[in-house]
Length: 103
Image (cartoon, rainbow, N blue to C red):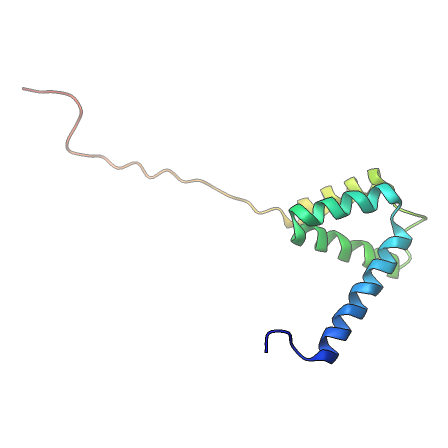
């Protein structure tokens, strides 16, 4: 059954409502709009930012509502923490056949 247990669905829905309530309390209108836009493009990054904000709110580390500029700073922090280092390694192989014509 792909829909899952009805009580499990209710729990997820309640959790989503609680998250939205907390975010509505800690973010101003512009910041919420930016976070919503981010969620459309990068849902995993938006989720990480939401978790960070909720955790800060629970520990009383937020003074007033977070502005759009404050959200941008938090986004940068989260991006630095979750940044994946990618490296490109060129493996150049010597080939016996060359392009030069040696007749």
